Length: 122
Image 1: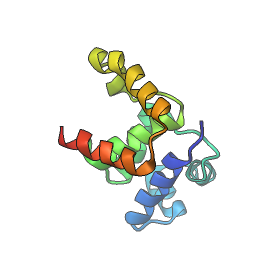
Image 2: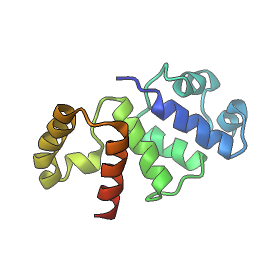
Image 3: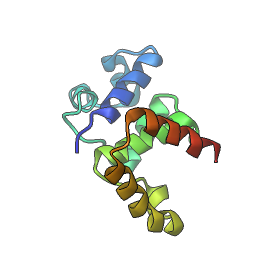
Image 4: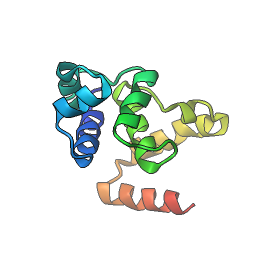
């Protein structure tokens, strides 16, 4: 399930920090070849420990929206649900119904955006 979203975020956050791929790797001890492959979606996101090192190198703060988005994208890229979903029993029980509803209704992108906005306000 390679969506490429994680690699896009990785590159976006690195560029926003004003670093070339090579500069970022030198500063943080990463292999430029592997980093390039991750940014292009050719390698999956690394382990959680390395993800934290990546996030810190990118200047992301734990608990910030960017941090959460980065880790969520990594989980989804691996075909996994984020840990906070897996550890929430109430959410896990309702998730299948929610997903089936989305799938059976063939919701339009506009309606999905509306639903997301309503969820954010709830």
